[in-house]
Every structure is written in structure tokens, then in C-alpha cells.
Length: 323
Image 1 (cartoon, rainbow, N blue to C red):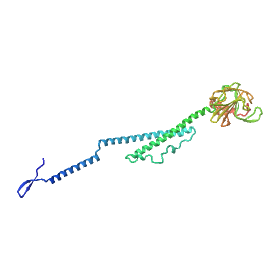
Image 2 (tube, helix red, strand yellow):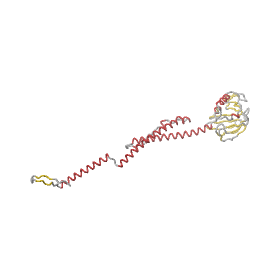
Image 3 (cartoon, rainbow, N blue to C red):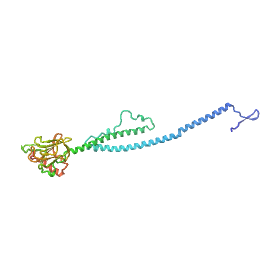
């Protein structure tokens, strides 16, 4: 209940009740309402500035969680980069070196992205710098992984080709040690058995009884199986690929046909004395890129170091060839 106010009237020498006019009542009411409104606005302002709503609190928690995840992602990328660096090092220093191919330059592996700003859409936000850094590092890492993946594909291809190469290179004696009488003549200048003149002997002669098995010294395909080459008599010519070719001459008979594929160790024919020959033996030649080379360098597949040393000594002796 509102208090009643009085004032002293000196004319009547008595207290009189204060009567408010309607204008005064309106002013007081309006003042009260304005004060209440201002206080309400002040409270709302303070609430917005210093007190978070439930939605804002949830958004802040989500943002903090996102920052934490970005930080963890950045750490994981650093770990992945360390592992990738190790793979790249082995790729350049071991794998590519072994297969005799050029290493991938570091600037090619670590190259960034030029041209237009790829990350413009990520600018203008509170945490733009962090998001751009993580995205950029992810892009660079993805590119490095792609380059390394292509490199490993190349290494796999080279390894498969290397395996074929190693299987194709002539690597064993064409006649087994237990069937061999002796290595009669080596590669180089020798005395011709018919003219007695010194001439270049382009292969090695292995003496063995007629009918002794002869084996392919590497994987390949028989180009010729005939007796149409001058002086060779019945002979076999095998193309091993990679520039290698072998010739087996003075055979008594064949065990393969022209065009047939053979593998190292396959029986291809038998020792004989056909063509220009002074006794049963096998004349064996190795060619690389169309030129004859010393076959003694291709017996690492079935000779011990001591046996190879003994054969090398015999092959270096100048004497008379058997053809």
C-alpha cells in the first residue's frame, strides 16, 4: 500500500494531504517504466557479453574438440612423414641403386603447389591459419605418397624384369662336369687345326664322347636348329633376350626344334663331330649385342671358385682349337 504524504499549510495552520495531479502521476509512471526498461536492456547486454547460452556452450565445446582433433591429426601427419622419409631414403639409396635407375630428386618429392591460392576458401575464419596449415601439409603428404607409390610400381616392374634377366643370362656350363673329358680350348687367339695359322677362336671347346648331353645355359628361344652355318655342322642358336645369344656347334643330334622355348638346364642336343671338327666336342659361344664375348665369365652358376680358377688357367693357354 502506497504511503500517504502530507504537507504543512501555514495559512490554515494544519497538515494537508498531498494530492498528485494526473500529469505528475504519468511522469512518475513513465520514469519508472523507462528505468525498468534500461535495467532490462543492461541485464541483457551483460548476459550476451559475459554469460554463454546453452547453444553457445555446446558450440564452444565442439570448437575445442575440433582444435584438439586438428592437433592430433597434425602429430599423426608428422609421424607419417617420418615413416615416408625412411621409405624414400631406402627407395633412392637401395632399391633404385640396385636396379641402376636414377633416384627421384628431393625437390620433386617435396615440391609444393604453385599457381592460384588453393586455400582461399579457408581464409577469414578465427582458426584459418591452423586449418590452412593442416590442409596444406595433408596435400603435400598426399603428393609425396603418390610419387612414392609410382616409384614402387616401377621398382616392382624392374624386379620382375631383373628376375627374367637373371634367368636368361647364360650362367652354367653347357656340359655337366661329370660328363666332361676336358676343356680343350678357350676363347682368344688359337692355332687352326687344319691350316695351323693363328686365328681368333670365338668360343670354348669342351671335349666329351659323342652323345654326351648338352644343356641350355639360360632361358630363351631357339632361333636356329640346323646345319646350314659354315663350319658349325649341326648346331643350335638360342636367343636369350637382353642382347644375349648362345651357339652350340658340332652336335650329333638335336633334342629341340627351331622356335621352341627352353629354360636353363633343358636338354637341347648331344655332342658330336659334325662340320669343321677334328674330334667329338662342343664348340660353345656367347654373344652380347651381336659381338662374341668370352664364355668363361658365365659359369658362375655351377662352378666352385677353385674349379673356376682351374678352368680360367686352362682357357688362357694358347694351343690348338678343335675347329
